[in-house]
View 1 (tube, rainbow, N blue to C red):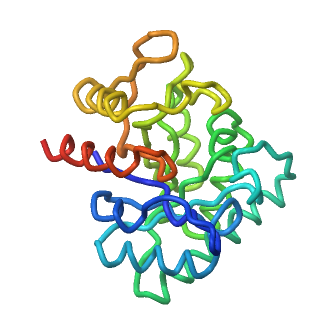
View 2: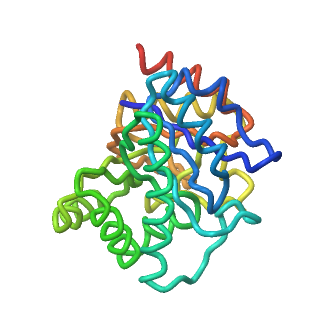
Length: 243
């Protein structure tokens, strides 16, 4: 099981996350591409940091929503949605190439990620967008109960899918993430995060908001870089992953 984290989410003089401290403990860095957060220099610095620590780089495109940090729903036509995804991925891909790095995967951010997890039409647009850039570029998606259907859908585009679970978010009974407007949507302690990761590693399951046990088979575990406990959490999860 790999460990990934959303990173490079600062913007100009506005600081977000603890990238320099977190990067040594993760396997995959999901780097913001300028629409929900980040800017060209921040992107370049984060790619350089990933290279320094031999961390795989993933493009982390989101809705064009700097004020809302990409966590607000937006109604965008299919052609425009595909273009804005490709624009963001292409920008990070160019920065990676300039530093002798390969872009390793694509993972959507925030409201766009959640929309893809619940809306088949959005999922199809995203798969089109990524496959037109490269059919060898994997797409990271949430490990939901409909995993097999997603894999079959990806086969139409020749895409490889990476499935991820979340260490620091509460799950709904249908295998999605509870809305951030809900007070307990983000785990408030490292102990809760550690408990959820142990369930994923030992039993491939999480406990939902209704105390149901949900099977979750994932390739990678995510910790959000803006979580107040992110640094402490990645250190503990790294120890768990190392056994």
